Length: 614
Ligand code: HEM
Image (cartoon, rainbow, N blue to C red; front, side):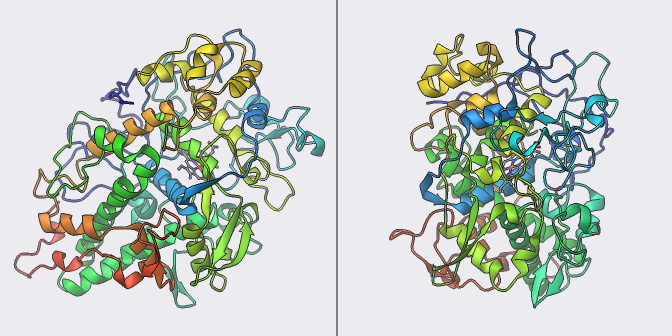
């Protein structure tokens, strides 16, 4: 299959600077915190606090912002009912890729988007459905409320007397007074779209300041038990709502979702430690560099390292190596710069990507997380829903390393329509027996954002456009199509979030054609629309030297990243998203390639002091 480049139906107008105001840019060597001024002609492209992009037209009941309804004028099928009917639990595991591949995907996601006004981890501040699962007064009156109603025949939840799950609508340009009266609401993402480690460094200057130690270019850490942890969040009872005491660890990083689950917190800490590791080496090599220079140079190297891992190690698993080469997302074997930056490409995160396609990988989540010792023996397992928003677990004994090895030794769930009940029955259960349903939330979020339907997404992707339910058989099985037909009244009602996740996977890949096409488009834009992308060498002020670039390419790997920053892991398989096997056996950490930071050593005379660069 060849994926043509996709055009936006209604791209965000370039002059749409509300609510952030115009930006005046100098040509800095370093990225801004919020992504502004990456594109010098369109300084707000990809910037935090701007609307998601769109491939398809909005679909609101009133054309402005009301939750969509069926073409017949009746309600769309209940999201919880769709979840139960089409996304049940069945434990099929991936034969090749490990849980690290799943978990790193969440890290990539958190780098690129975050819905405005929605907590995504701890409880939302607005109660549309209360803690006992009963509709709250705001449900009827507050336009930001769209609680998910539990159908009366729901085996699990109706039996408990649960009426609803809380659901708060994403903040939009209308909420912020930035949309003309009859124009559709545009949902806002509050982090930069660029792959710039905003979840480590923060997505605005204030947040970035708060995270810096201002000594030796380092990020702030707290040392407990001889190990570095992120600083403490000031509101433990809100942020880490499951903590039993305000003295429990509760982390503050560049992203408010950090405490959501233990494996996510581990990877955020690995990234925090990696920044400080790079900063310490740069400080030793260049003792005359001030804090500011070390911070920005370490951040710049760190982002390049992670971009390399993402494009050459992580994404090929999901988008396919050949597909990525053909569509110019990667250039394997390149020995010099790849000067493909295109200032006309808008890297803004697409709503179809963030709210439908990339969320499909919630299917990869496992409900129990294995703990594995250094000799790769199973030493325990924890239940995911016991540890949402309670990171104290990872500071206990050797759990940090045991869970990190678990990431690389436990298979991920197979990419299919089967979802682990830990996230469809027990999600955020907060010490109760049952919890919420992430799949139902994904479906409701698609409606909240007025996402175009499945048919229009296929049209936008230049794929065959189905006019009838039967036409969908090209990508969807007869069994699933029967269920779709029983749920939806017309083919036009069928939603992208739902049908996209039912498509048969493209051979050897992890999704069907529609999601593959959307994700390929997104990661093409993310690369080509980023002036600071690490392989770009056009501007000597922002480019790495050829030998630095070569070392980033040779020395960046997921395996080495884990080895360097876990507490005391001694060995790792070189391809750390893949299960250990005869062709991917454990090697000593020290034998894994590493970036040669001495290539950043400068003589005093040649060094650039940051103040000369602004
Ligand atoms: C244990 C792992 C994970 C948990 C508990 C989790 C949970 C969540 C939650 C609660 C939301 C917000 C739901 C809403 O709209 O109300 C969300 C959003 C999202 N998730 Fe996950 N997720 C996990 C892993 C992943 C993975 C592996 C991926 C992709 C590879 C992913 C991709 C996304 C995306 C793209 C969004 C939307 C982000 C935005 O634009 O705000 N998630 N997830």
